Image (cartoon, rainbow, N blue to C red; front, side, top):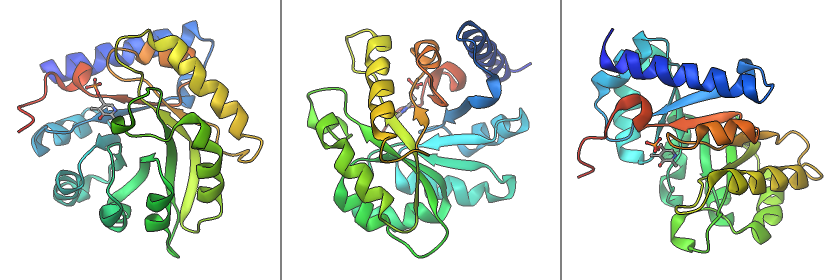
Amino acid sequence: MSALADRLAAVQGSVADAARDAGRGLSEITTIVVTKFQPVSLIAELASLGVRDVGENRHQEAKVKAEALAYLGLRWHFVGQLQSKKARQVRAYASAIHSVDRMSLVDALRSDEASVDCFAQVDLTDDPGRGGVAPDGLEALVEHVLETPGLRLRGLMAVAPLGEPARPAFARVRLLSERIRAIAPDATDLSIGMSHDFREAILEGATHLRIGTAITGNRPDAG
Ligand SMILES: *Cc1c(COP(=O)(O)O)cnc(C)c1O
């Protein structure tokens, strides 16, 4: 087996262990392999190993890769901060957009075409530069997504803050998720958990893990 296959199998094993510990079925958990900065050849190898869901965080890079690998029929998840002027273009290849975090972006994603899945990204830090809506603005954002054609709200997305334990942070997201179900009963998914905290995320109900380096190995120079 290649090193990539080894790492993928190891992560899949850990995901299965955590799901069992949480008393959850593996079928409720989608592992998205985040392939930003990685070459197209690595994504093709992942596909040959059975990976169907991949994540990217920059439009230009995602577009080139999605076009080059269109024949594989992968699901492309957009997980990075998204400029409104790029929103329409991302819709063209993305199965899901995990980083919907402001009203103007929702407006830019409005469409009469088939709906794209999306997640409202919540900011768990006090640092507005990191992306995500502050928790006190979440409900208004969710309402706006619900009234905008062309978007299907799947749930919430968050990144655990640096320098604090991930599990209580994810527990906050779970509480917010329960709260918004009063207005968005179908928005039950949770896109939480990365290479270093996916176990904690599974214990707090993650339905979508966004795992990069634990599977791909170190990223080539970000450039
Ligand atoms: C890069 C990235 C990930 C994956 O991070 P790893 O630590 O490599 O697993 C997940 N989510 C987002 C939003 C990212 O930008």
